[in-house]
Image (cartoon, rainbow, N blue to C red; front, side, top):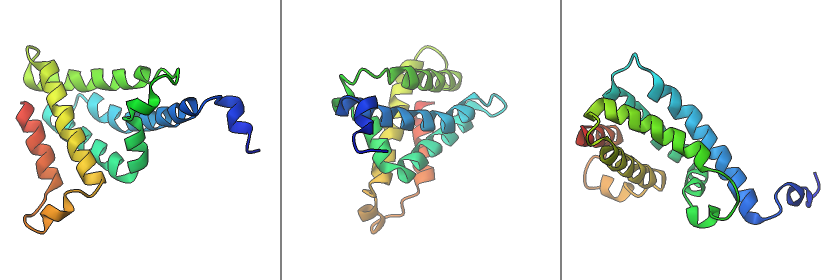
Amino acid sequence: MSHGAPRRYFPTHAQLVAAVARSGLDDLGTEIAPVLRDRSTPPRDRLVSAASAYIGFAQRRRAMFELMFRHDILVGSGADLRSLSLPMIAELHSVVAEFVGDQYSWTATVRFWMSIHGLAVLVANRALEPMAALIEIDVEALVIDAVDAVG
């Protein structure tokens, strides 16, 4: 492949970066969707498993994870990244609604995602390590607390 080949398929930097982010969103969805769709597992357990998978993805693929949520870079790329993220959000919401009931399910979904996304960023960036010198940090326990907080 020549140095100029990517320019043929991605005329702008934003389009190239959006294509990379699309790949990451697709990979994340591939990991999380089966967990959320498993109706044989109680909703609370599905949320714990999905959150653990989300955090694991952030740890293993930190740069990709960061890029996927850099809307300041991705805006104007012409890519329809919402076509990948909205179905994941809808699936998450359906499990949260099962867990908490419908009346407050969107608020609970946002609170849950904020907690898990924040935890994923802290874990992936190893920002919790200084606290680990003072107290034991149990990420799985924090995930369970985040799930129980929305229930």
